[in-house]
Image 1 (cartoon, one colour):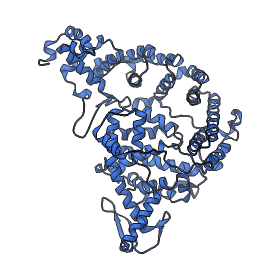
Image 2: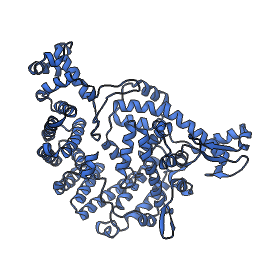
Image 3: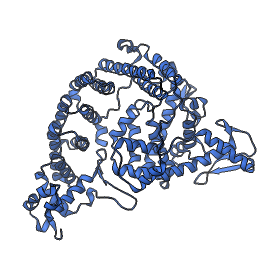
Image 4: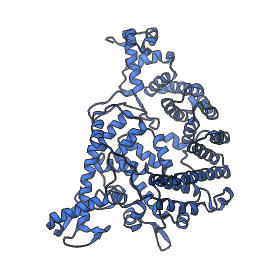
Length: 607
């Protein structure tokens, strides 16, 4: 288009060009239709981020050198054309996208009116449109919009909420009730309909023939029973899920396969966590009187049937091909396969292999083990001293062997981060747009993430996925400490000190010095945690972040990127703790957690 759209194109002209712009046949398009088609293509390619109010649309593709369009790139002429055709676009989801982008670029009353129109369109869409991911993401943003603009969008917001509740009752596809339920819970909505939604979830569970799906519905029912204050009903649902998980574990163990034993132990770990959310004095009423003790024994038995400590489920992967695919951004894999490949670009560090290599290095260059070494931080502080010629032990190896292992580990971090993780991350983010909901689904089901921490961990993983690795690592470091503390507590390890009647938590470094840490997590993962988060001569992330020692220059550091990727990888594993001490765990952990990761209204407004 060579002339200004605002000077030469009345609304009727662009409305007349709509059919050609929406046609898939390029030969039928006029110049106006081609301009509109290109403009619509830009808008549909925007990466919707419903949790980011200030920047809800990101580029579809971005590298260090260039990126695709975002709403702020739209010119006044382009906005004028979109305004002219917005109400006439026949495709509802595209119409919603256009109006939302226009609202984002508008101000004052016009902005409020456009947002009200968007929320109203979403209510109509939920009543009959297929709930595809793009529409669900717009519903997520639509609820947040209605909460922020209660005056102009109040009635439309109520319509959207009612439409979602109605769709939960009468879904068109199997998991629609779960998707919509999660959105309502996330924003603290639907409370007036909590009883109706809980009953609907139980009905869906009864009608579903797949145990895993039925468990999802019963867990959702429990959350809504808690919302309406019917805790007894919620505990009945939780007990049902616990027994279903135990039944699945029995079936898995009956196959006699080592991998099946690992999966069974992970299912039992999840069952144990759920059982502990029921108050001890109420467990007998729902059939869980001795469940925690029994499940802990079942986990131990599952380990004995063939499961080692925390190990990766991996298959042969050509790292060269994956790295090449990441750099070149070749045709993307489906989301599940792409995430799997990304998390398996490299495996957990092999403690014994690194120890053997360090010992061999000492034999080849024996003088290095006789020299005293002073270790400095990036800002010149002395953070450690290694005495030469001594046999002091660090985590079961000599001090000079440990020093060599840390040196090799830091080189490994650099190679993996720059050669695999970052290229893989670029390929993954350019082709798959994950939201907080995706990560929350993972963290809420992971047996490694303690109850009540799913949302914080999910938010940290999302920060990393969106490229803010420094914020991600700063949030994840204390969560790693809490994960370690929880699992050691579950194993009967004392994680607090008592002095003068005051209880003080033992820090991560001291916790990882316990031999039990190796038994709970396995020597490979224990080495990763010690080397990355704890050791003063390594990245020492826990200390660096806790004491504010990280500067702006570290925002994209190798260790921050690696910590984010490693945490995601660990959370995705089928973890189980083979050292459960039921009495110790129940004395420490709260017997009842009510929030189930629900957001309050204030949380929703600040998302």
